[in-house]
Length: 201
Image (cartoon, rainbow, N blue to C red; front, side, top):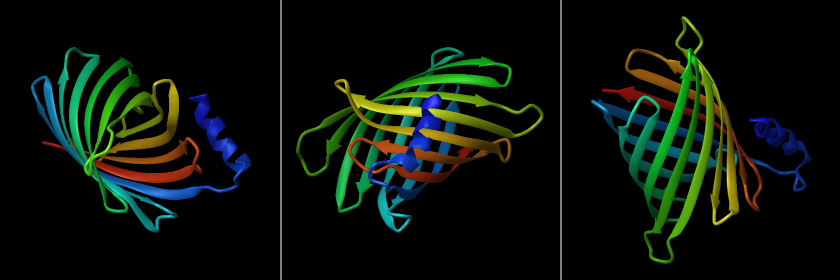
């Protein structure tokens, strides 16, 4: 997680002396079924200082909790990308979580198969994520820090570095407020603020 602070500090030293600002907004519906869980996520992303629609996507996910600490997931995602481009993604993920009191540490490995709608070659992405969170006792607030690295074939693609706060508004709904420092390979960094809403049925 020290990388998060280092990356943010490097913003002012960026050789291009430029950065972008964007926003990510999402709504997710979740339905647990015994050890399984099904979810539908809709997300909108803006860039160019909030003036341009970067993309939007829908993700349908089915998950299974093998035990108290291991969760497996399979997803289909449909992406509508600026410029009239459409992508399909087939996704598989495994998440391991260790908990002690209000503290939780989770490591997730996610594989993505990216399929262009207009034809062309498919691409692959491996996403490795570390998340550390702490549920404040006698409250509905859970602050967290998180880092996710995108690679394939030993080539770094980009990194996402988060600091956020989850607020349980009720027994079945949660809001997620976060700041994300996005560092893509070969492009200017992006500062992103985001809001997510999750409802459980």
